[in-house]
Structure formats: structure tokens, C-alpha cells
Amino acid sequence: MEDNIIEKILDKNKNYNFLDIDTLLEIFNDSGISYYPYSAEAVEAKEKAVGAIPKLLKEYFLKIGRIKKIDDEEDDEYSYDLLEDSAGCYIKELEDISILTDKELKENYGDGAENEEDDYLVFGFEMICREEFAIKLKDINKENPDIFSAE
Image (cartoon, rainbow, N blue to C red):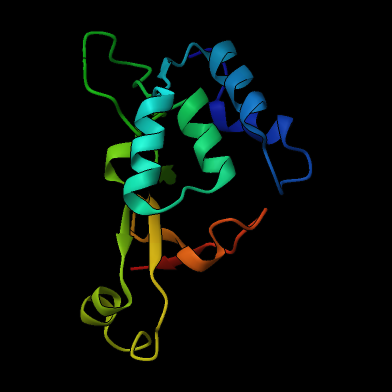
């Protein structure tokens, strides 16, 4: 690989607050990363199934979708692993985003979730601790909704 992808992302994202999808696409194209956007029909079907998908996440699925591993051209599997031996946070594939109800949250996470009354859209994860990232369904249409994590 010519340059470290993380360095490219940090270089393009000087303020470290937001990296738009088009800039990410530019980095992927410059780095030879293969990506496979989902069809509008697939995204709409998933949106209907879960109730809503945040605007930025929807744009991600429509423009980037699945990512193919850089170092394995023969592998037909899609991969979250952009870097060899990498760790980090990843967007789940469209098929894998799901709703976590307040009841499931209480059952699965016990302490700290006993007063939870909101349902969440789970859309990503972190590789090392296997934390999942989610947005409250009631906040799904906000321009920049808070992101919550659970381990």
C-alpha cells in the first residue's frame, strides 16, 4: 500500500470532527480500496424495516456500502478490515444494522441499563472490545444525533 490510509484520513480531516463521504471516497479511490455501494432499493427496504436511517449513514450506504479488503483480491468476501492487523471502529453492513429495544438492552447489559426506555439503531462496532455503536431511534432524524456505545 503506498501510504497509510489512517494518515490520509487524518490529513484530509484537519479539524478531526467530521469527514464527509465524498472526501472518504476520494481517499479510498486514491488508495485503491474497492467499495460496493448498496442500491437505493436495498437502502429503502432496510430503512422501512428499521423505521429510519440517519442521513449521513444512508449516504454512506448509497455511496460506499461494503468495503473490500485491500490485500486480498481473490477473496470475494467483503471486509471491515482496511488495514492488515488493524483495529478500529467500523460501520456494519446494511443487512446487519438492527434495532436494540429497551427490553433487550436491559436483558443484555443489566446494570446501567435498568432505567433505559429508548430503542436504538445499532450501526457499528469497535474491533478490540467489541463495543457496539448506536443512535436512539427518537433522535434518528437529528442532523447530528448523539452516538452511544455498549460493550
